[in-house]
Length: 445
Picture 1 (cartoon, helix red, strand yellow):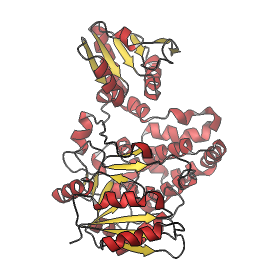
Picture 2 (tube, helix red, strand yellow):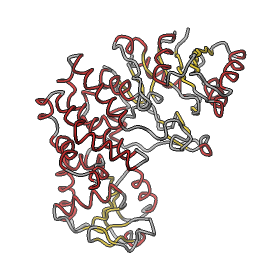
Picture 3 (cartoon, helix red, strand yellow):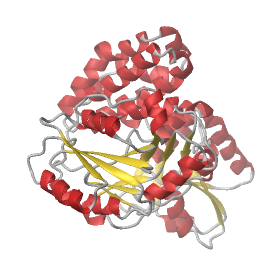
């Protein structure tokens, strides 16, 4: 029985393909097939595939006579697949040997539509270094214990999930019944497919394992085909998503999620565009017609969506590209808007207990937090950062101090991210202070 069909679109993948295939063949779950869609490669990809196929008949090869792209190739693979579940993998990544087994066990156990697991982008030199990720207590409780649907979550929580298909296992009957296929675009061709799948799934679950299961290689190097992405592809992906929700009669149910994910995807597309001129052109398109097209999907729904998202979308119409407002639109800002009163209560409690609050970390989250505190006239804090270049400089009126100077008395340390929380916990080991992460206060999973 073929439990899992592994679908791999391949174009000129000779450099790492052997490594990747060995990584798949070494999986602890062995009841799979590998459908390799050779997208008219001009290098040694074809020879490598035939050599491996002679050694293992679970490898099936589809040869495109002309280059069709990853989306069409994946769709061809789905139509040919015999497995009960689908995994979409790339030809240059490395996988934990238990990735398929653990995912399969979880999806069967819960009869889920989609199982997700951890993945990271790494450079080739570190691709075999085993890693784990940090998760908050709330993250594990909400996403890893029992199946959930997107409608069980706040729209902003949608941003916890990658739009990549590679870190997910999908039930075939679910994809077929929902008529989901990849969108033909030069980049972001998986955004519509994955986002719609997450919206429509009745049962989602995250693998309750902090180990990284998939190591995606060199995704930010200039030699990758997808390096210089056209931001318009994100626009067309989100436009397709909105149009499809309208056509399926589902927009009223999912509009909060749609506008939230659209806002952040558009913002991220601007930031990820390598050339400033290309980012500016995309911004001007959104200003002149793109944002209006999203609003016109349902003006009534747009007016009912989260006020923060509404105002964010409207900034494209009122603020210039050179203002750079979009650079500071981190998810923390939305949580401060929604749950900021919890943070203010935390500071007031510390003040009433005569406890000094130390804000640790002045990256993007730290700057956003300090702006929020300044707006609400909260000044009884000290600010520290381990970066020696930042120490001694000022931010929002605060002198940035060395960590050692702030660990000598009973105090409360507020870490501005999960990564910094671990850093602080190590530095404060044995010291008489309390360490808390901002996400815990704001209920950020």
